[in-house]
Image (tube, rainbow, N blue to C red; front, side, top):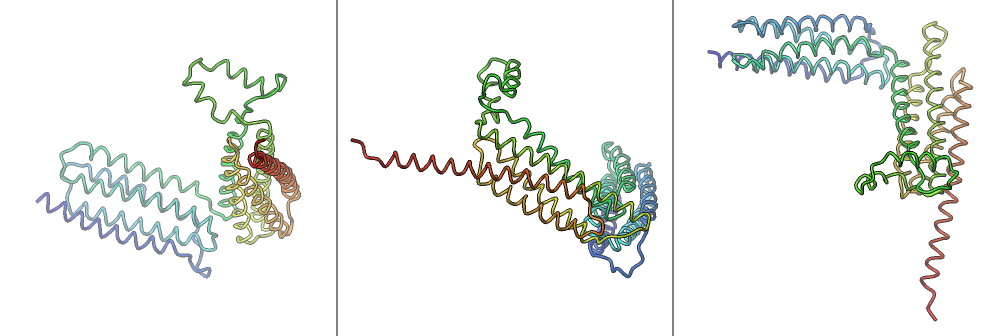
Length: 368
């Protein structure tokens, strides 16, 4: 009887899971602009109901000799609430751009995943004498609570969603900048400040062959490579300033929206984000190519792409009714840093080509 009951509950669960998967397909579609937008507060409230029902499920499924019919009814109530939650979430993205839609989908998907884990474990543990399953169910119910509570932190406007996405780019750029600043020259003049710092650091390294070989990585830049690294650091630092100005600009746009002064195209904001993300990718490339031996051609390509991105960013910002002077000035500063890096990379390429020509000339000269 226990085995048959468990198989029955498994079939019921699979039916509910399939229904939710179908509902998720609807959520992945863009709702018609003519539909009435659902307030995110309604989504949060429904999420709270799902969380409460998860607690009920946790108590019911871990009780002594739970009734099969009661468990089946509990699953029905739970998944009906979950489906209602998803439909409300779908209604909340009316007029939303790709970034806001992605944020809403991620939050809703987390609630779904936690719910699936809870119910699958509950059915799997039915009829089992193992205490592990019984103990895991309350924990899984808690993860549903956490996922539903996290809905309060989900962005509710395109401005907020795009601002947070740009902030993530800024965090990544800041990490790259930190790593770039750790690069040290392999040799320098005794009075060189960076040489002195490297010498102080070296005193703390244990005197062993293994530790010294490990410590050499990234610390043997030639003076010319170090100059390129410093110019690249300037580029990344200025990129960070651009991102900060852009986040401030979007925050100001949100304030204008809240005061009903004006609204701006979601497409324009999305393009700003896409441009920033593209420049962020090239910043990663810059950081990766600075380690010796430096890849000058790849550095030149990354710098060229950043330059193109800056021009696109300035053009997009200029299309706004009240473009940010601070942001445009930050873009000019970044553009100047990139040009200096490109100039240095160009001279480095010329020096390398000249050296290769001389070496070939020597190799081809016959001996007397």
